[in-house]
Length: 210
Ligand code: GAR
Figure (cartoon, rainbow, N blue to C red):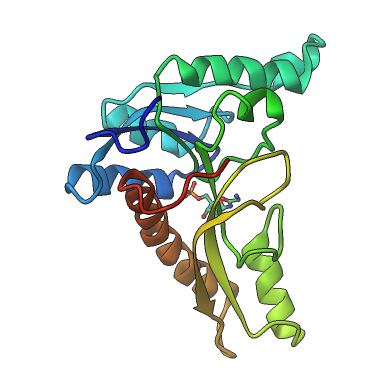
């Protein structure tokens, strides 16, 4: 993990669900748009379709649940420490949280300083937490915002959906939008922007987050 500019960067992707952003990253690697390969996919949910995507791509797909840790008293920090150990075993250059629905503590983050990045389907500082697109849609209908967006950011600490921005882009909301139409537009931007963020990081175009 010495250089940020390896020839073929190693990416660990953490997911909790459908894995469409994982798929965008896999497709970009396969198409030669990203000088990288996904070395492991970890999900905290067993039924995450992203695990199927990983298996189909021949990538180690690991289900790593939090529940046993909560049930036997080891707790969230031990889960995060063990998760870090698992991920570190694949020697990733970057850890990409792609729809990963678990706030990581320093027990995980300190293991990979400046190497963990996250997707948030809203503009910087807006709608942290779950259901950001639906909350933006509601805010638009109430006249509180005129547009939304997507950001990819470093995860330097335990804050939720915040940290130095790598790339962000606005997404328009139209008066006749349904929530589904807005979600579709936001997801399309997510997929493009996540690949762009990784490309810039791997190329060393983004100053490291210390
Ligand atoms: C993403 O579309 C993103 O909007 C949302 O989870 C979805 C996962 O989709 N939320 C977050 O990422 C919160 N950080 P995917 O599993 O199809 O990539």
